[in-house]
Length: 232
Image 1 (cartoon, rainbow, N blue to C red):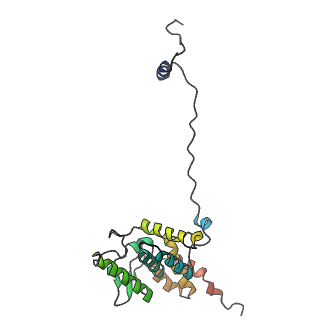
Image 2 (spheres, helix red, strand yellow):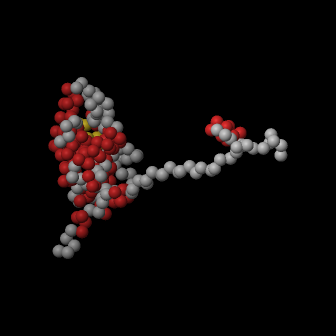
Image 3 (cartoon, rainbow, N blue to C red):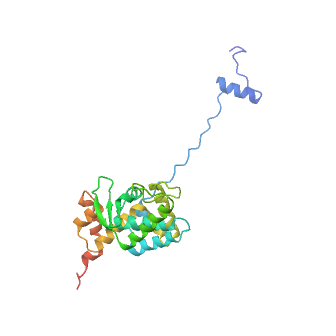
């Protein structure tokens, strides 16, 4: 090996860098620490004891929403309408004033996921809540016949994510925080309530807009009244 071929040790940081770039010296292998993977999302059954709320618990949610300083009435009305008609979040936020018939006291329910459309009667509480919301929007000049019922302060429709976040905040501020209330729990709450009231499975299927009756039997299977009188 000639003198020009001999590898001499670099004497400064600049020569060290050049040596690494030309491959004349090989530095020690440095292991790059792997990034910690994010924790897996817990299953719903591990987070909460059940996927539905009882009627008193739904009322507690609405009371908590009404106590909020901003949009309390609107938020409570969203909870009420989603619960009484078993609406999915997408169905609720897409609801327009054209679907509400105050004179006939009915709501034309449009379903997603290839669900069956239906016409539901509205309760007095629901009618009063929606009339007040309508008047408030009229005063702001926002109401058109095709406008969404539930809007932000800027007059744009509330999104599914917006409804989900609102319900999470209301649930956290209520005594029901351990149940982690979420939009679909209101639909389940509707199904379980009607099943416990003794509604037959076929009628319940049509009310919730299920194409397949197997999706409805989950509510009747856990209805508490199915075993009443067995030990009498």
